[in-house]
Image 1: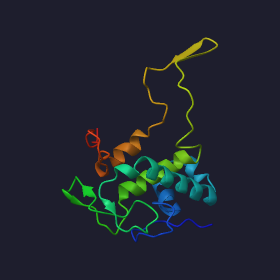
Image 2: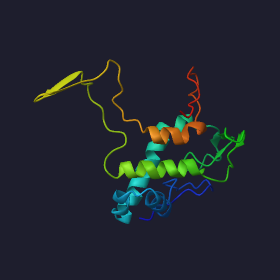
Image 3: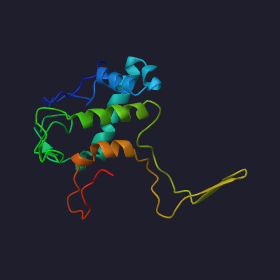
Length: 169
């Protein structure tokens, strides 16, 4: 089944923010041989999983509001702040940072789940001469710092939260 990419129209059937062609160009420019080795079907599946992840993790934090109730994905958005210009992203596009973040996450999704199931937290584990001990309160979830940085200016703190807006480091 061919991947339906959101182009900024607010499609009710879109499945990804990034097309295979755009992801291919993104990863070719960065020398990601693992992406180039994937079949088209595997790339489409990874892009769907990356988009799903973005909705689950960043969806509640996106600046602005969906353009229509009928659109399948969180973008396009109206009144989404664009801090570097002091203005707003156009409500008829999917911004380049969203497309690039989707491509980056798709590469990671091609080799395993982005949101894995979590069990009990390991405090100490010894395997042969190696002992691993985790800090109290450390997260079990994987964070994708490069993607967080790409999207930082497009996110806001959750409603009712005293957290500050994410900023680029």
